[in-house]
Image (cartoon, rainbow, N blue to C red; front, side):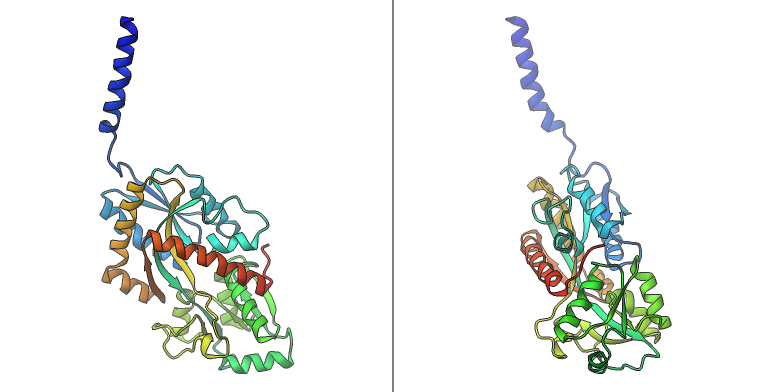
Length: 321
C-alpha cells in the first residue's frame, strides 16, 4: 500500500510539474516550407516574412523550397507535420487548385490545415514579345478567330495556374490556340521574349521586370481591376470578360490541430508584419496586391478559392500532367 501511495504521489507531481516545466513557444527554430521555386512571388514573399517573423518571435525561421508535383510534395509535408507551430506553409493557390486538377491528392486543402494569415493576391498578365504584331488583346482575339490554333501560348506546365487562366479566357472568347507546357515558368518567359511562342501568362511579379525593360509587352491584367504596377494595362473585365478574376493568393497555413494559443501567436505576429509600410512597399515592388486577412477571414477565403479554382478547371478543361 505504501509503495502504491508513493507511486500515486509521483504521478500527481509529474502532472503538476510537467506543464510548468514546458518551454514557452517558440523554443526552437521554425521551418517554413515554400512549395514553389526560388525567385517566384511565393518564394519572395515567404523570405521577406520569414526574416521578420523570426525577429518578432525571438527565434530563427528557416525557409526551404520544396518543389515537385505542382507543389503537392511540399504542401503535403506540412499537412502531415506535427501541430506544434514549428512547421509553416507559405501557401500559394495550387494548395486549392490541385484538388480540382488531380483525381487524387494526399491532403485536403481545407480539413488538413490551420489558417494563419493571408498576405497578398498576385495577378497574372498576358504578355507578348516586344516585336509581336499584336498591340491589344482585341487584335489578337480577332486574329485567332480566323486562324485557329496558329498562335501558341506558353505555361509553367499542364494544369498550372498559367495554363488554366489562358485556357479559361480562350474558352470564354470561343477561340483556340496551341498550348506549349514547360517545366517551370523561367523557360516559358525566355521563349516568349525570343518569339518561340506568341504569348504567355506569367505572374505579374515575374513579368514586370521584362515589361519595364521593354523585352515584353503587356496586353491585359488577369484580374477584376487594373494594378498600380502597370496602370496603363487594362484588366480583362474591361475587355469583354465580365467577372473574370484569376488572381492567385499567397498566405500562411499550419497543419491541422494547431493549438489555439500557438495559432493566435503566429497569426498575430504575421498580421503585424503584413500590415507594416515595409511590407506594402515590398508588395508593390513585386507587382502584388495587398490582401491581408486574419485566420478567421482566411479560412473563409480558402473555401471560396477552392470553389473558384474548381470552376476554373471545369471551364478551362485543364488537366494535370
